[in-house]
Each structure stands twice: as C-alpha cells, then as structure tokens.
Image (cartoon, rainbow, N blue to C red; front, side, top):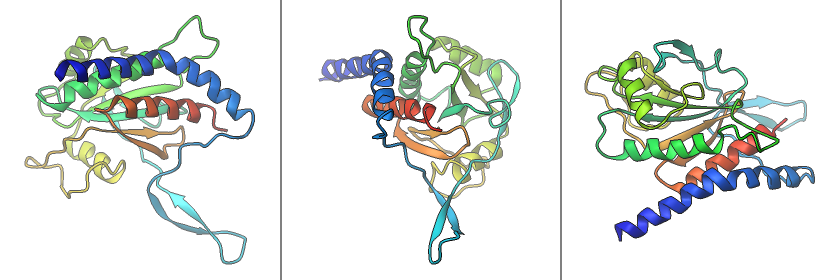
Length: 232
C-alpha cells in the first residue's frame, strides 16, 4: 500500500515538473480565444459604491508587507524586494517530524516546475518566488534554515526560507493570509502547524489556497501561477 501511494506521488511530481510547460502552451492558446477562467480572489474586506445605482464592488483583502530574514542572513521585504512577483507561501519548522518534510518536498516540485529551461521560449523563473516561513523562529535561525534548504536542493535566489519575530509571523499567518482560524497572540504557548499553501498575485491579493500534501493540488497551484502570469 505504501509503495502504491509512493508511486502516485512520483507520478504527481512528474505532472508538475514536466507537464507544466505544456500547460503553459495550451493555456496561452486558450487565452488568445478569451475562454480563460482566472483564479478568483479570496477574502472580502468590504464593499465599495459604484457609479451604477444600487450596485457595489467587492473590496478584496490586499496583503500587507512583512520584513523577515532569509536563509542567507539578508533582511528582506515581501512587497518591496519582491515587487511585481507572484508569491507561493507556506509555513513549516525545521524539527517537524510529520508534515513539514513532505510539504517542503512538494514545494520543491514547484521550484522544478518554474526553473529556467533554456529549451523553452517562455520561462517563469523570474516571475515567481517561493516563500517558506518558519513557525518556530526561536530555534530556526538563518544558519539553521540555510542548512535545511541545502538538504532540499533549494535555489536560494528563487526560494526564501524566512525567520524573524514570532508575533510578526503569526500575525501575518492569521490576519493577512488567514490560514489559522484559532485565535492567538504569537506568544510562547501559541503554535501554528498547517499544510496550506497560499498563492499571492503581483498586487498581493490572495488568489488560491492549496493542500501542500496533495500533488494534484500542487499541480493546480502551478497551473494557477501560469494563469496569473498572463493576467493583464
């Protein structure tokens, strides 16, 4: 049974890493015919009146900035240093014995999917940034994150592992990305542990939530990134 599940995951990984370029081609073809359904927006903050009587526009949540330290020891800003980039965000911690290694492995499929391929006319390697944020920053210093990232063959330019103030991280997870419904203050007893991956567009609107332990959902995330890259 375990071998069968492993085979499914292997095939799913191939779908993400190698079928994606074909997806890019076919999506571009479909888009030229105006038949494309873009990823929708998540989390409404309110309504805005329009010029048309009796009608309102939905104001969707726009994620605010977060400044943390990456695995190279550099202080980075998600909105300023990555301006104009699509972000794929997950949360993990280095000593996690359960879901985190698998989550990072599945994020690596996305790294492979968007790695620059000289044989392809179009590449998304500079348009997408992977972001993994530790939920245990007291232990996960940037040298610890660097060692962890190297074990997974991370491209340090296009995939950041971030650490910093726990309250800032937990506030971002709860009140900006909405991945945790339970209240908390980021204190010593507070802990977030999730398999969710969040997709942010270039303008920092939330455009997708995915199960990071499901290769079918990883493939869906990859396809949505391609769609967002074509969005005007």
